[in-house]
Length: 221
Image (cartoon, rainbow, N blue to C red; front, side, top):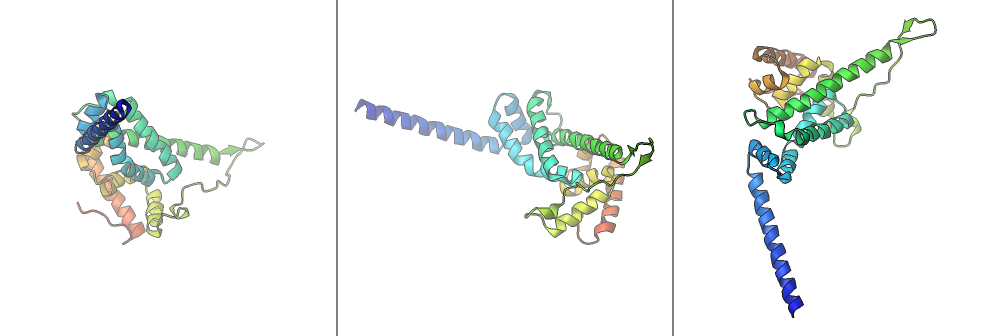
């Protein structure tokens, strides 16, 4: 009998704990990004998990549109959140969390792009036995969206066009037209003056529209 009572007490305790946990989770879900970061800084790991859920898809889209390599973007996505976790106490509420997050991801993406560019140049300029430079054929290792079942033909057109415009234009167009960020936030993320941001967006849109015509739906100013 005593054992039965103990089991009932245990079950009731477990039920209360689940209810409390669910209530806390719901409360966290309702919080702003900045409030979640405050909670995470105070030691609430679940707040960090919610931020990861909120931004994983958006960040992956940003990184992919910038670099066009899904596998590498997955690595950079993990590295972005790892840095958020590691540097959580350096975040201050004077900045929007999304701005801080995209700045981290953007720095990683730009660094990756520079590395690729250096590797490609080193591969092209090889030296033969007579110490004369010659060109090597380099296989195209860029990611092709149509190789993945979930990709669409339209997605491939968009990414191919993205890869053809300069990365300086590509990044700001992705941030504005795909990520829907404000101009001032893009300026803060990229470290560029507002006028430069707007100019690059307009020039990038013009180049993409010429490549895609009606395939890509641009946002109005």
